[in-house]
Image 1: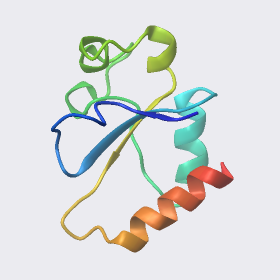
Image 2 (image 1 turned 30 degrees about the vertical axis):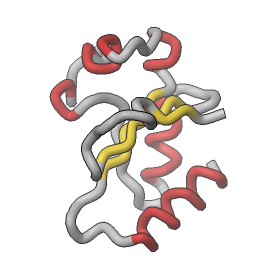
Image 3 (image 1 turned 90 degrees about the vertical axis):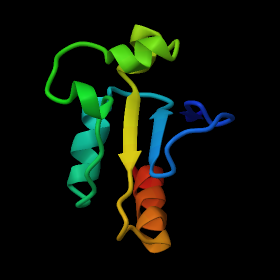
Length: 93
């Protein structure tokens, strides 16, 4: 039930935007934070702003979908094991 935005197009190698299957994105953030994983609910350029991200709107994401959107980003030190930990936590949550 999760949809990866722009999965079939060129995009940044280190960023994944997903529309989660259910629940408010703030709940996902809280639950993942309790597992020591930090994720975002919008595009980096909209951090700290209220309302749906203009980036998500430009991608055709509806307001309902925007409330379920999460952004996962990796850095140079992110490992395959880090991604596996995130995936396991998402499945638990």
